[in-house]
Image 1 (tube, rainbow, N blue to C red):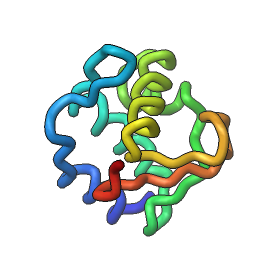
Image 2 (tube, helix red, strand yellow):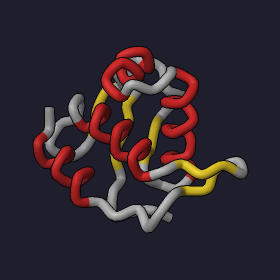
Image 3 (cartoon, rainbow, N blue to C red):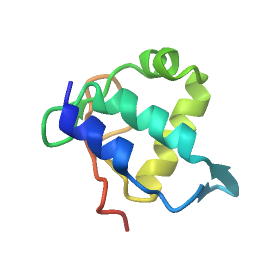
Image 4 (cartoon, helix red, strand yellow):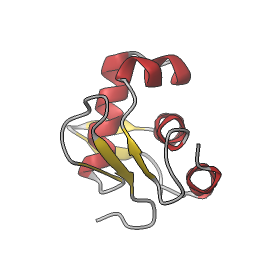
Length: 99
């Protein structure tokens, strides 16, 4: 667990909902998913992606909702991933560096 990454998520301001594929992704969804990811991150916000089902259990969202939020975060530059969201894929949380 990275307390630095988690603190960054708590303090992040996303400027309102993110628009992705014509749908709004709200800050409560964004922070829930990012906190679940930050819980697995090292001090630099880099992690091996946990199983989507685990993120879903931690956030109370469905697996499909988690994947949608993660795709939206990647599209907006808040997440970088080597591959799709497979367990063990390297993921980096990119707060403060969105495109």
